[in-house]
Length: 130
Length: 311
View 1 (cartoon, rainbow over the protein chains, first blue to last red):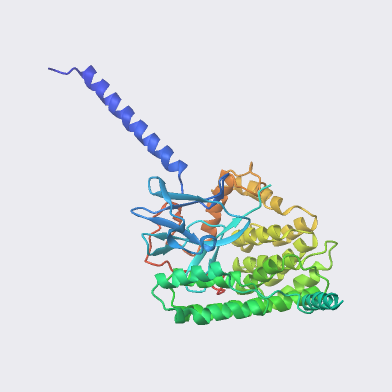
View 2: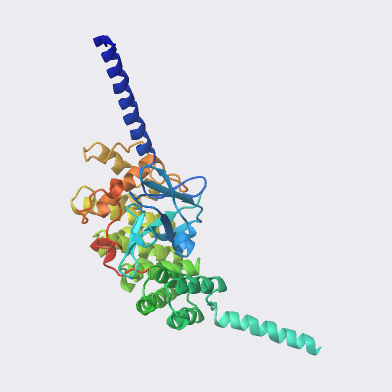
């Protein structure tokens, strides 16, 4: 069972190709679900946040009465959580709640304002659709 | 005959009531009350703990002030685990600002500004005050609005005031901001355009301070009647070629689609967030970092948190 140098070279090529494809694939996935400012989609406004290690992530804001579990988010890739919410035209303060008790100021929002209680809310601006 | 007289009396009294008190009294809706009670119970507070909050909201409604934003603040506070005793002063401040907003809008009405959406005008103006606009600045905006051909509404005046307050958060001076917003109102910018203008100027606050952009030139663009959604398009093109590392964004139409944003627009936002948060140096670009800081994130930005705004 001796292996020729040619055989070794073939195996190396396969391994390198697999690694390359894995890296390209994971890069592509990461890129497609990058957390960003809330953006309008056909179904509503999409909210995204990166929350590594989180078990539950919820979106809360004036649009859902600040009720924690009214708008749960789902993992869409890696550590990124997302949810789409139909919203009417207007401006809405919002935050994220991670694992039930961590209220997080959105890293990306159209604007930011203090809430009067010592925390900062993100603001999402929803425009009228043409 | 008697019935007809009674009917006439009823109609007359209804007309008179409406004429004497055009401001409709509002009260907390059953749904809001139920939601507040759910949140209260979830936090382990008794009904008595929130009685004064409910009373405050209802009293504000009786005075003709919109109750929705107040009810929302109660819900927000309870949901965030804030003690009702700490919600109380925040609510009082909000009510006081709504009353001030009512006063300045009445003044503006006296000068001939049409009402528009009263509730939105009141809430927006109250928010403008919360974020640092002053009654004098509003009066100046109101005066400037009368110089234009466009007949501004109170809602637009309120949006202008909020736009100015947002600009001031971006370290734009009151005079410069007032002149710019006033020009926008004169040129017939809609409320949403005025608000966008404020946010865009705030995002580029450092550009204006450090001379990379000119407020005077921007005002001139507005004066020439350039549309609000086109104001920053050329600037973005310029930035893309300046090696500022902001990416090639020349092919995008800023705010062109009012219902949605494209990828390049989002890219700008990420950048703007970095600008907005320039004083959060320890965080850097938070878009690719874990967002699990301390248990409750504290606001630490002077430019967006120093106004005690409680929307």
